[in-house]
Length: 128
Image (cartoon, rainbow, N blue to C red; front, side, top):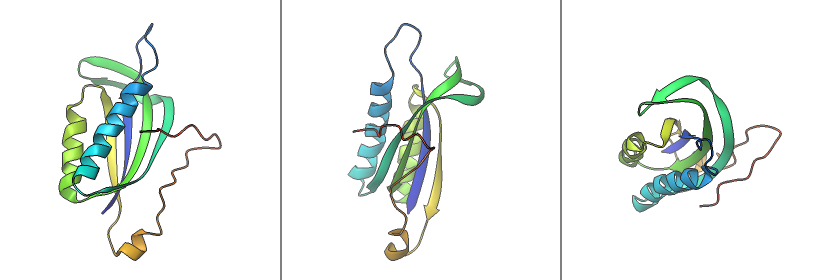
């Protein structure tokens, strides 16, 4: 099945360097789980830091902005559950949501690419 996951990672605290290494590590962890269980990653895109729609409390910390990234991948539903459980337990994650984009023949799913546009600006992709 084809999935698309949008994840929001906590931002760096004042006086600390960028949290991009944390974002890459989380994307790498999710990607490793998918690949280890026979899945395929179609694309990963770094969207950067944006304000959250509303303040969110997670792991006893309040967040008003987060670092967004999106991952599109093929995996079984069991693999999807493993990824969700792993990300849900990571204290660096603020939120994530996964949407099933399609179920069907390989031919019909092959028409859906790995490109994930966000806006006119094209931020750098995560290199994992």
